[in-house]
Every structure is written in C-alpha cells, then in structure tokens.
Length: 132
Image (cartoon, rainbow, N blue to C red; front, side, top):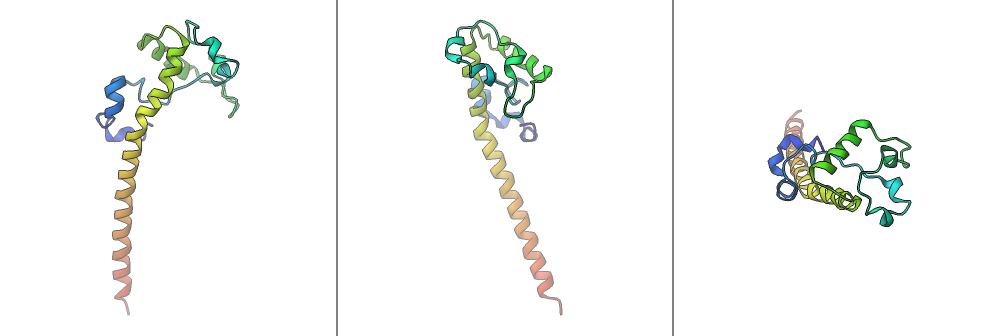
C-alpha cells in the first residue's frame, strides 16, 4: 500500500469519501482470523478488541506485531466501534475502498512503462537496423 501512496492520498477518492484521510486508513488492516475461526457469530457482540494473541497468523505462523495491534486499537477507538461486528465490517470495507484506486494507479504505471519500453525497442531496432 505504501508504494501506491507516492501518487498522493487525494487520488483515493473512494476511501476519502467513506473513511476520511487518515494514516489509519492507508495501511493494511489486521484481522483476528484465528479468533474468528472459533465462531465469530457468537463473538460479534463482544465489546472490545480481542487480545493480540487472537490476531496470530496461522498461515505464516507469525504473531501480530505490537505496532499493528496498537493500530488496530486506534482504529477501534477512532471509528467509535463498540462491538466486534463493527471491526469485522470495517476491515473489508477499508480494503475494498482502496482497491479501485490501487488498480487505477497500477494500470497507469504499467501503461507508462509499456509505452517507454516500446519506444526504447523501436529506437533500438532503428539504431541496429541502420548498422552495416
């Protein structure tokens, strides 16, 4: 995500419209998947963010960093979440809102690179085509 921010946060119109301009929004979110796998529906009514251990990444066998957990707590407080269901709904929303702009920025950069590469190849062909 940070690589896409070079183009400016103002390019992320969807995100700004629904979530505002905040460092909390422009970073990959974290989600307590291992906690969720033990029955999230029953846990939706919980009134606080799960403990850091609940965010353990079983796919990569990694614990969540304290820095990421602090950011999750800031998101909880900033958006005035009062139950776990609020956090559950916010997590995919923030990712989905970032997605269209990420695609657009990537496509624009790709097109610029292709155009530059094509021009270089044409120049190279011209140069070598004229050599004896």
